[in-house]
Length: 100
Length: 380
Image (cartoon, rainbow over all chains, first blue to last red; front, side, top):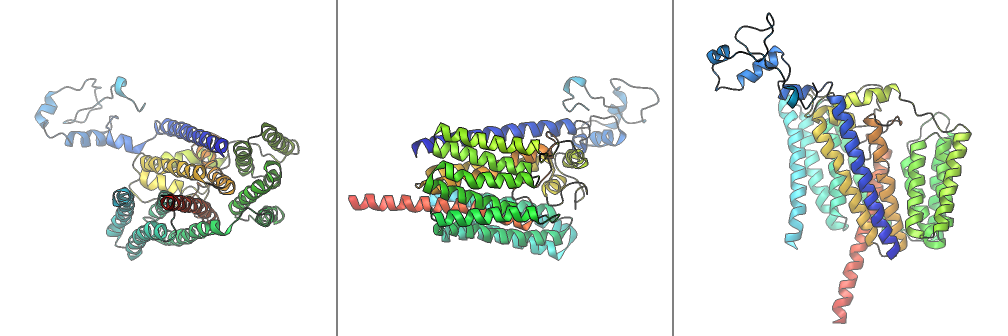
Protein backbone atom coordinates (compact mmCIF):
# COMPACT_ATOMS: atom_id res chain seq x y z
CA UNK A 1 0.00 0.00 0.00
CA UNK A 2 2.93 2.37 0.66
CA UNK A 3 4.26 1.87 -2.84
CA UNK A 4 0.78 2.33 -4.25
CA UNK A 5 0.27 5.60 -2.37
CA UNK A 6 3.62 6.99 -3.45
CA UNK A 7 2.80 6.10 -7.05
CA UNK A 8 -0.63 7.69 -6.66
CA UNK A 9 1.15 10.88 -5.64
CA UNK A 10 3.35 10.63 -8.73
CA UNK A 11 0.27 10.20 -10.90
CA UNK A 12 -1.32 13.26 -9.26
CA UNK A 13 1.82 15.25 -10.00
CA UNK A 14 1.82 14.03 -13.58
CA UNK A 15 -1.86 14.92 -14.01
CA UNK A 16 -1.19 18.39 -12.61
CA UNK A 17 1.71 18.95 -15.00
CA UNK A 18 -0.32 17.70 -17.97
CA UNK A 19 -3.26 19.89 -16.99
CA UNK A 20 -1.15 23.02 -16.53
CA UNK A 21 0.74 22.38 -19.78
CA UNK A 22 -2.59 21.97 -21.57
CA UNK A 23 -3.83 25.22 -20.04
CA UNK A 24 -0.71 27.11 -21.15
CA UNK A 25 -0.84 25.68 -24.68
CA UNK A 26 -4.56 26.42 -25.01
CA UNK A 27 -4.12 29.95 -23.65
CA UNK A 28 -1.29 30.57 -26.11
CA UNK A 29 -3.41 29.26 -28.95
CA UNK A 30 -6.37 31.43 -27.93
CA UNK A 31 -4.21 34.53 -27.58
CA UNK A 32 -2.60 33.92 -30.95
CA UNK A 33 -6.03 33.66 -32.49
CA UNK A 34 -7.24 36.64 -30.48
CA UNK A 35 -4.32 38.71 -31.72
CA UNK A 36 -6.04 38.72 -35.08
CA UNK A 37 -9.56 39.46 -33.92
CA UNK A 38 -10.36 40.20 -30.32
CA UNK A 39 -13.23 42.70 -30.16
CA UNK A 40 -13.18 43.26 -26.44
CA UNK A 41 -9.52 44.23 -26.36
CA UNK A 42 -10.02 46.82 -29.06
CA UNK A 43 -13.02 48.09 -27.09
CA UNK A 44 -11.05 48.44 -23.87
CA UNK A 45 -7.82 49.78 -25.36
CA UNK A 46 -8.18 52.28 -28.23
CA UNK A 47 -5.25 51.02 -30.24
CA UNK A 48 -6.72 51.53 -33.67
CA UNK A 49 -7.24 54.94 -35.18
CA UNK A 50 -10.95 54.42 -35.80
CA UNK A 51 -13.12 57.45 -35.06
CA UNK A 52 -15.39 55.57 -32.63
CA UNK A 53 -12.57 54.33 -30.45
CA UNK A 54 -10.85 57.71 -30.53
CA UNK A 55 -14.07 59.44 -29.59
CA UNK A 56 -14.73 57.08 -26.71
CA UNK A 57 -11.17 57.46 -25.48
CA UNK A 58 -11.33 61.23 -25.74
CA UNK A 59 -14.63 61.38 -23.90
CA UNK A 60 -13.21 59.28 -21.07
CA UNK A 61 -10.51 61.88 -20.22
CA UNK A 62 -12.29 64.97 -18.87
CA UNK A 63 -9.07 66.82 -17.93
CA UNK A 64 -8.30 67.61 -21.55
CA UNK A 65 -10.45 70.40 -22.92
CA UNK A 66 -11.41 70.54 -26.62
CA UNK A 67 -9.26 73.62 -27.06
CA UNK A 68 -6.23 71.81 -25.70
CA UNK A 69 -6.98 68.89 -27.95
CA UNK A 70 -6.94 71.12 -30.98
CA UNK A 71 -3.72 72.76 -29.83
CA UNK A 72 -1.97 69.45 -29.29
CA UNK A 73 -0.74 68.00 -32.58
CA UNK A 74 -1.02 64.29 -33.19
CA UNK A 75 2.29 62.39 -33.25
CA UNK A 76 1.93 61.31 -36.86
CA UNK A 77 -0.76 63.11 -38.70
CA UNK A 78 -1.71 62.11 -42.18
CA UNK A 79 -3.31 64.91 -44.14
CA UNK A 80 -6.89 64.30 -45.16
CA UNK A 81 -7.56 61.49 -42.67
CA UNK A 82 -8.26 63.44 -39.52
CA UNK A 83 -11.67 64.63 -38.50
CA UNK A 84 -11.54 68.25 -37.32
CA UNK A 85 -11.73 68.54 -33.55
CA UNK A 86 -10.46 65.02 -32.89
CA UNK A 87 -6.99 63.63 -32.43
CA UNK A 88 -5.61 60.46 -33.94
CA UNK A 89 -3.96 58.12 -31.49
CA UNK A 90 -1.41 55.83 -33.05
CA UNK A 91 -0.36 52.67 -31.22
CA UNK A 92 3.18 52.67 -29.94
CA UNK A 93 4.75 49.56 -31.43
CA UNK A 94 6.86 49.09 -28.31
CA UNK A 95 3.76 48.65 -26.12
CA UNK A 96 1.49 46.99 -28.66
CA UNK A 97 1.37 43.71 -26.74
CA UNK A 98 -1.67 42.42 -28.57
CA UNK A 99 0.03 42.60 -31.94
CA UNK A 100 -2.77 44.61 -33.52
CA UNK B 1 -15.45 22.60 14.18
CA UNK B 2 -17.13 25.84 13.22
CA UNK B 3 -13.79 27.38 12.30
CA UNK B 4 -13.07 24.50 9.97
CA UNK B 5 -16.41 24.55 8.24
CA UNK B 6 -16.73 28.32 7.76
CA UNK B 7 -14.50 28.61 4.63
CA UNK B 8 -16.52 25.83 3.03
CA UNK B 9 -19.75 27.65 3.73
CA UNK B 10 -18.21 30.82 2.39
CA UNK B 11 -17.40 29.01 -0.86
CA UNK B 12 -20.92 27.62 -1.05
CA UNK B 13 -22.39 31.06 -0.37
CA UNK B 14 -20.14 32.75 -2.94
CA UNK B 15 -20.95 30.14 -5.59
CA UNK B 16 -24.69 30.43 -4.97
CA UNK B 17 -24.52 34.24 -4.96
CA UNK B 18 -22.60 34.31 -8.23
CA UNK B 19 -25.12 31.95 -9.84
CA UNK B 20 -27.97 34.11 -8.52
CA UNK B 21 -26.43 37.27 -9.96
CA UNK B 22 -25.61 35.64 -13.28
CA UNK B 23 -29.22 34.54 -13.68
CA UNK B 24 -30.93 37.52 -12.06
CA UNK B 25 -29.29 40.14 -14.30
CA UNK B 26 -30.73 38.71 -17.56
CA UNK B 27 -34.03 38.07 -15.74
CA UNK B 28 -34.31 41.74 -14.75
CA UNK B 29 -33.25 42.85 -18.22
CA UNK B 30 -35.64 40.59 -20.12
CA UNK B 31 -38.42 40.36 -17.55
CA UNK B 32 -38.81 36.68 -18.40
CA UNK B 33 -40.48 34.63 -15.67
CA UNK B 34 -38.55 31.52 -16.67
CA UNK B 35 -35.30 33.33 -15.88
CA UNK B 36 -36.63 34.30 -12.43
CA UNK B 37 -37.57 30.66 -11.92
CA UNK B 38 -34.10 29.59 -12.98
CA UNK B 39 -32.41 32.14 -10.70
CA UNK B 40 -34.39 30.92 -7.70
CA UNK B 41 -34.16 27.24 -8.65
CA UNK B 42 -30.43 27.14 -9.32
CA UNK B 43 -29.55 29.12 -6.19
CA UNK B 44 -31.71 27.01 -3.90
CA UNK B 45 -30.56 23.78 -5.57
CA UNK B 46 -26.91 24.80 -5.14
CA UNK B 47 -27.35 25.77 -1.52
CA UNK B 48 -29.30 22.65 -0.64
CA UNK B 49 -27.23 20.37 -2.85
CA UNK B 50 -23.92 21.53 -1.39
CA UNK B 51 -25.01 21.35 2.24
CA UNK B 52 -27.65 18.69 2.81
CA UNK B 53 -26.17 15.67 0.95
CA UNK B 54 -22.75 16.45 2.45
CA UNK B 55 -24.29 16.29 5.91
CA UNK B 56 -26.65 13.36 5.34
CA UNK B 57 -24.32 11.06 3.41
CA UNK B 58 -20.93 12.41 4.59
CA UNK B 59 -19.96 13.34 1.03
CA UNK B 60 -16.77 15.18 0.24
CA UNK B 61 -17.73 18.86 0.23
CA UNK B 62 -15.09 20.02 -2.23
CA UNK B 63 -15.92 17.43 -4.88
CA UNK B 64 -19.64 18.00 -4.38
CA UNK B 65 -19.35 21.79 -4.54
CA UNK B 66 -17.14 21.82 -7.63
CA UNK B 67 -19.33 19.30 -9.45
CA UNK B 68 -22.48 21.31 -8.72
CA UNK B 69 -20.79 24.59 -9.64
CA UNK B 70 -19.65 23.22 -13.01
CA UNK B 71 -23.20 22.01 -13.61
CA UNK B 72 -24.54 25.45 -12.68
CA UNK B 73 -22.14 27.17 -15.10
CA UNK B 74 -23.74 25.23 -17.95
CA UNK B 75 -27.20 26.41 -16.85
CA UNK B 76 -26.01 30.00 -16.46
CA UNK B 77 -24.52 29.98 -19.96
CA UNK B 78 -27.69 28.66 -21.57
CA UNK B 79 -30.10 30.87 -19.63
CA UNK B 80 -29.80 34.32 -21.31
CA UNK B 81 -30.45 33.16 -24.87
CA UNK B 82 -32.60 30.07 -24.37
CA UNK B 83 -34.31 29.77 -20.97
CA UNK B 84 -36.09 26.58 -22.01
CA UNK B 85 -32.78 24.86 -22.74
CA UNK B 86 -31.47 26.13 -19.39
CA UNK B 87 -34.50 24.68 -17.60
CA UNK B 88 -33.86 21.35 -19.31
CA UNK B 89 -30.22 21.56 -18.26
CA UNK B 90 -31.34 22.23 -14.69
CA UNK B 91 -33.38 19.02 -14.83
CA UNK B 92 -30.41 17.12 -16.24
CA UNK B 93 -28.16 18.46 -13.49
CA UNK B 94 -30.75 17.41 -10.90
CA UNK B 95 -30.71 13.89 -12.32
CA UNK B 96 -26.91 14.08 -12.24
CA UNK B 97 -26.97 15.11 -8.58
CA UNK B 98 -29.16 12.09 -7.84
CA UNK B 99 -26.67 9.92 -9.74
CA UNK B 100 -23.88 11.39 -7.60
CA UNK B 101 -25.70 10.42 -4.41
CA UNK B 102 -26.41 6.94 -5.85
CA UNK B 103 -22.70 6.57 -6.63
CA UNK B 104 -21.82 7.50 -3.06
CA UNK B 105 -24.31 4.97 -1.69
CA UNK B 106 -23.13 2.32 -4.16
CA UNK B 107 -19.66 2.29 -2.61
CA UNK B 108 -21.11 0.92 0.61
CA UNK B 109 -22.76 -1.93 -1.32
CA UNK B 110 -19.86 -2.77 -3.61
CA UNK B 111 -17.38 -5.29 -2.30
CA UNK B 112 -14.24 -6.68 -3.84
CA UNK B 113 -15.72 -10.01 -4.95
CA UNK B 114 -15.72 -12.06 -8.11
CA UNK B 115 -19.47 -11.53 -8.41
CA UNK B 116 -18.95 -7.75 -8.60
CA UNK B 117 -16.11 -8.23 -11.05
CA UNK B 118 -18.00 -10.51 -13.41
CA UNK B 119 -21.26 -8.55 -13.33
CA UNK B 120 -19.63 -5.16 -13.91
CA UNK B 121 -17.31 -6.44 -16.64
CA UNK B 122 -20.21 -8.22 -18.37
CA UNK B 123 -22.39 -5.10 -18.27
CA UNK B 124 -19.55 -2.81 -19.39
CA UNK B 125 -18.59 -5.02 -22.31
CA UNK B 126 -22.26 -5.49 -23.21
CA UNK B 127 -22.80 -1.72 -23.41
CA UNK B 128 -19.72 -1.25 -25.60
CA UNK B 129 -20.57 -4.22 -27.81
CA UNK B 130 -24.17 -2.99 -28.06
CA UNK B 131 -22.86 0.26 -29.50
CA UNK B 132 -20.79 -1.76 -31.96
CA UNK B 133 -23.68 -3.90 -33.15
CA UNK B 134 -26.29 -1.13 -33.10
CA UNK B 135 -25.30 -0.18 -36.63
CA UNK B 136 -25.42 3.53 -37.25
CA UNK B 137 -27.22 4.27 -33.97
CA UNK B 138 -25.01 6.06 -31.48
CA UNK B 139 -25.57 4.72 -27.96
CA UNK B 140 -24.50 7.43 -25.49
CA UNK B 141 -23.57 4.91 -22.81
CA UNK B 142 -19.82 4.78 -23.33
CA UNK B 143 -19.11 6.72 -20.13
CA UNK B 144 -21.23 4.30 -18.09
CA UNK B 145 -19.46 1.36 -19.71
CA UNK B 146 -16.05 2.83 -18.81
CA UNK B 147 -17.07 3.22 -15.16
CA UNK B 148 -18.31 -0.37 -15.07
CA UNK B 149 -15.00 -1.55 -16.53
CA UNK B 150 -13.09 0.39 -13.85
CA UNK B 151 -15.23 -1.26 -11.14
CA UNK B 152 -14.50 -4.63 -12.79
CA UNK B 153 -10.77 -3.85 -12.88
CA UNK B 154 -10.75 -2.91 -9.19
CA UNK B 155 -12.63 -6.05 -8.15
CA UNK B 156 -10.50 -8.37 -10.28
CA UNK B 157 -7.38 -6.65 -9.01
CA UNK B 158 -8.38 -7.00 -5.35
CA UNK B 159 -9.26 -10.68 -5.83
CA UNK B 160 -6.68 -11.98 -8.30
CA UNK B 161 -4.04 -9.33 -8.97
CA UNK B 162 -2.96 -7.33 -11.98
CA UNK B 163 -2.96 -9.84 -14.85
CA UNK B 164 -6.59 -10.94 -14.36
CA UNK B 165 -7.66 -7.32 -14.00
CA UNK B 166 -6.21 -6.52 -17.42
CA UNK B 167 -8.77 -8.62 -19.29
CA UNK B 168 -11.85 -6.33 -19.08
CA UNK B 169 -9.66 -3.31 -19.85
CA UNK B 170 -8.20 -5.00 -22.94
CA UNK B 171 -11.61 -6.14 -24.19
CA UNK B 172 -13.08 -2.68 -23.58
CA UNK B 173 -10.20 -0.99 -25.42
CA UNK B 174 -10.56 -3.37 -28.36
CA UNK B 175 -14.30 -2.68 -28.60
CA UNK B 176 -13.73 1.08 -28.46
CA UNK B 177 -11.12 0.81 -31.22
CA UNK B 178 -13.54 -1.21 -33.33
CA UNK B 179 -16.13 1.55 -32.87
CA UNK B 180 -13.61 4.15 -34.02
CA UNK B 181 -13.48 5.87 -30.61
CA UNK B 182 -9.71 6.20 -30.49
CA UNK B 183 -9.52 8.92 -27.84
CA UNK B 184 -11.78 7.00 -25.44
CA UNK B 185 -9.78 3.82 -26.12
CA UNK B 186 -6.54 5.66 -25.35
CA UNK B 187 -8.05 7.08 -22.14
CA UNK B 188 -9.14 3.61 -21.00
CA UNK B 189 -5.78 2.07 -21.93
CA UNK B 190 -3.82 4.78 -20.11
CA UNK B 191 -6.06 4.45 -17.05
CA UNK B 192 -5.54 0.69 -16.88
CA UNK B 193 -1.79 1.08 -17.45
CA UNK B 194 -1.44 3.69 -14.70
CA UNK B 195 -3.48 1.54 -12.33
CA UNK B 196 -1.42 -1.58 -13.06
CA UNK B 197 1.81 0.35 -12.62
CA UNK B 198 0.75 1.98 -9.36
CA UNK B 199 -1.26 -0.79 -7.70
CA UNK B 200 0.53 -3.94 -8.81
CA UNK B 201 4.04 -2.57 -8.75
CA UNK B 202 5.64 -5.50 -10.60
CA UNK B 203 7.61 -4.35 -13.62
CA UNK B 204 6.88 -7.58 -15.53
CA UNK B 205 3.12 -7.10 -15.23
CA UNK B 206 3.37 -3.44 -16.23
CA UNK B 207 5.47 -4.31 -19.26
CA UNK B 208 3.05 -7.10 -20.21
CA UNK B 209 0.14 -4.66 -20.00
CA UNK B 210 2.03 -2.10 -22.05
CA UNK B 211 2.85 -4.70 -24.71
CA UNK B 212 -0.77 -5.91 -24.84
CA UNK B 213 -2.14 -2.40 -25.36
CA UNK B 214 0.58 -1.59 -27.90
CA UNK B 215 -0.36 -4.71 -29.88
CA UNK B 216 -4.03 -3.65 -29.75
CA UNK B 217 -3.35 -0.16 -31.08
CA UNK B 218 -0.85 -1.35 -33.69
CA UNK B 219 -3.30 -4.03 -34.80
CA UNK B 220 -6.09 -1.48 -35.05
CA UNK B 221 -3.83 0.77 -37.12
CA UNK B 222 -2.80 -2.13 -39.35
CA UNK B 223 -6.43 -3.17 -39.90
CA UNK B 224 -7.49 0.40 -40.63
CA UNK B 225 -9.56 1.04 -37.51
CA UNK B 226 -7.52 4.07 -36.45
CA UNK B 227 -8.99 7.16 -38.11
CA UNK B 228 -6.75 9.66 -39.86
CA UNK B 229 -6.46 12.70 -37.65
CA UNK B 230 -6.86 15.54 -40.12
CA UNK B 231 -8.35 18.94 -39.28
CA UNK B 232 -12.06 19.00 -40.09
CA UNK B 233 -14.47 21.88 -40.64
CA UNK B 234 -15.57 21.62 -37.02
CA UNK B 235 -12.01 21.95 -35.75
CA UNK B 236 -11.32 24.97 -37.92
CA UNK B 237 -14.53 26.58 -36.59
CA UNK B 238 -13.84 25.70 -32.97
CA UNK B 239 -11.12 28.18 -31.99
CA UNK B 240 -12.72 31.20 -33.73
CA UNK B 241 -15.99 30.33 -31.96
CA UNK B 242 -14.19 30.27 -28.61
CA UNK B 243 -12.40 33.61 -29.01
CA UNK B 244 -15.09 35.44 -30.99
CA UNK B 245 -16.68 36.89 -27.86
CA UNK B 246 -13.38 38.26 -26.61
CA UNK B 247 -12.07 38.30 -23.08
CA UNK B 248 -15.31 39.23 -21.32
CA UNK B 249 -18.07 37.87 -23.52
CA UNK B 250 -20.35 39.11 -26.25
CA UNK B 251 -22.82 41.94 -25.63
CA UNK B 252 -25.70 39.90 -27.00
CA UNK B 253 -26.59 36.50 -25.60
CA UNK B 254 -25.23 33.57 -27.58
CA UNK B 255 -27.81 30.84 -28.07
CA UNK B 256 -26.01 28.12 -29.97
CA UNK B 257 -22.57 27.75 -31.49
CA UNK B 258 -21.76 27.03 -35.12
CA UNK B 259 -23.74 24.11 -36.52
CA UNK B 260 -20.49 22.32 -37.34
CA UNK B 261 -19.48 22.24 -33.66
CA UNK B 262 -20.69 19.50 -31.31
CA UNK B 263 -24.14 20.49 -30.09
CA UNK B 264 -23.73 18.70 -26.76
CA UNK B 265 -20.72 20.80 -25.74
CA UNK B 266 -21.51 23.78 -23.53
CA UNK B 267 -17.96 25.15 -23.76
CA UNK B 268 -18.78 27.35 -26.75
CA UNK B 269 -21.91 28.81 -25.15
CA UNK B 270 -19.95 29.61 -21.97
CA UNK B 271 -17.13 31.26 -23.93
CA UNK B 272 -19.65 33.15 -26.07
CA UNK B 273 -21.62 34.54 -23.15
CA UNK B 274 -18.94 35.07 -20.52
CA UNK B 275 -15.72 35.36 -22.51
CA UNK B 276 -12.32 33.72 -22.32
CA UNK B 277 -11.42 34.90 -18.81
CA UNK B 278 -14.44 33.31 -17.12
CA UNK B 279 -14.11 30.19 -19.30
CA UNK B 280 -10.46 29.82 -18.33
CA UNK B 281 -11.22 30.24 -14.64
CA UNK B 282 -14.00 27.67 -14.91
CA UNK B 283 -11.72 25.20 -16.67
CA UNK B 284 -9.11 25.66 -13.95
CA UNK B 285 -11.62 24.25 -11.45
CA UNK B 286 -11.04 20.80 -12.90
CA UNK B 287 -7.60 20.77 -11.31
CA UNK B 288 -8.71 20.92 -7.63
CA UNK B 289 -11.44 18.42 -8.46
CA UNK B 290 -8.90 15.95 -9.84
CA UNK B 291 -6.38 16.56 -7.08
CA UNK B 292 -9.02 16.10 -4.38
CA UNK B 293 -10.05 12.82 -6.00
CA UNK B 294 -6.44 11.64 -6.08
CA UNK B 295 -6.10 12.60 -2.43
CA UNK B 296 -9.20 10.54 -1.58
CA UNK B 297 -7.66 7.57 -3.42
CA UNK B 298 -4.43 7.97 -1.49
CA UNK B 299 -6.18 7.91 1.88
CA UNK B 300 -8.28 4.80 1.16
CA UNK B 301 -7.59 1.89 3.49
CA UNK B 302 -8.60 -1.02 1.27
CA UNK B 303 -6.89 -1.82 -2.01
CA UNK B 304 -10.27 -2.09 -3.76
CA UNK B 305 -11.37 1.39 -2.74
CA UNK B 306 -7.98 2.92 -3.55
CA UNK B 307 -7.80 1.42 -7.03
CA UNK B 308 -11.44 2.25 -7.74
CA UNK B 309 -11.03 5.87 -6.63
CA UNK B 310 -7.85 6.35 -8.64
CA UNK B 311 -9.50 4.72 -11.65
CA UNK B 312 -12.40 7.17 -11.37
CA UNK B 313 -9.97 10.09 -11.15
CA UNK B 314 -7.97 8.93 -14.16
CA UNK B 315 -10.97 8.17 -16.36
CA UNK B 316 -12.37 11.62 -15.50
CA UNK B 317 -9.13 13.59 -15.77
CA UNK B 318 -7.47 12.03 -18.79
CA UNK B 319 -10.37 13.08 -21.00
CA UNK B 320 -9.92 16.79 -20.29
CA UNK B 321 -6.57 17.49 -22.09
CA UNK B 322 -7.57 15.95 -25.47
CA UNK B 323 -10.92 17.77 -25.41
CA UNK B 324 -9.27 21.11 -24.65
CA UNK B 325 -6.44 20.62 -27.12
CA UNK B 326 -8.88 19.78 -29.91
CA UNK B 327 -11.26 22.62 -28.99
CA UNK B 328 -8.42 25.15 -29.02
CA UNK B 329 -7.15 23.85 -32.35
CA UNK B 330 -3.86 22.47 -31.07
CA UNK B 331 -4.46 18.82 -31.99
CA UNK B 332 -6.68 17.56 -34.83
CA UNK B 333 -8.68 15.23 -32.56
CA UNK B 334 -12.46 14.77 -32.77
CA UNK B 335 -14.34 17.46 -30.82
CA UNK B 336 -16.29 16.26 -27.81
CA UNK B 337 -17.85 17.87 -24.71
CA UNK B 338 -15.89 18.43 -21.53
CA UNK B 339 -16.89 16.43 -18.45
CA UNK B 340 -19.87 18.02 -16.65
CA UNK B 341 -20.17 20.73 -19.33
CA UNK B 342 -22.40 18.69 -21.59
CA UNK B 343 -26.10 18.58 -22.29
CA UNK B 344 -26.10 14.84 -22.85
CA UNK B 345 -27.99 13.31 -19.93
CA UNK B 346 -26.36 9.83 -20.02
CA UNK B 347 -22.87 11.35 -20.12
CA UNK B 348 -23.64 13.86 -17.36
CA UNK B 349 -25.20 11.17 -15.16
CA UNK B 350 -22.23 8.85 -15.69
CA UNK B 351 -19.76 11.62 -14.85
CA UNK B 352 -21.70 12.55 -11.72
CA UNK B 353 -21.80 8.84 -10.81
CA UNK B 354 -17.99 8.77 -11.13
CA UNK B 355 -17.70 11.72 -8.75
CA UNK B 356 -20.27 10.07 -6.49
CA UNK B 357 -18.07 6.97 -6.25
CA UNK B 358 -15.21 9.26 -5.20
CA UNK B 359 -17.42 10.92 -2.60
CA UNK B 360 -18.41 7.46 -1.36
CA UNK B 361 -14.76 6.40 -0.94
CA UNK B 362 -14.17 9.68 0.89
CA UNK B 363 -17.02 8.95 3.29
CA UNK B 364 -15.62 5.43 3.91
CA UNK B 365 -12.24 7.04 4.68
CA UNK B 366 -13.88 9.40 7.14
CA UNK B 367 -15.69 6.50 8.79
CA UNK B 368 -12.37 4.64 9.12
CA UNK B 369 -10.76 7.69 10.72
CA UNK B 370 -13.66 8.07 13.12
CA UNK B 371 -13.36 4.42 14.07
CA UNK B 372 -9.64 4.86 14.68
CA UNK B 373 -10.32 7.84 16.91
CA UNK B 374 -12.94 5.84 18.80
CA UNK B 375 -10.54 2.92 19.31
CA UNK B 376 -7.79 5.28 20.44
CA UNK B 377 -10.16 6.84 22.94
CA UNK B 378 -11.15 3.39 24.26
CA UNK B 379 -7.49 2.39 24.60
CA UNK B 380 -6.89 5.37 26.88
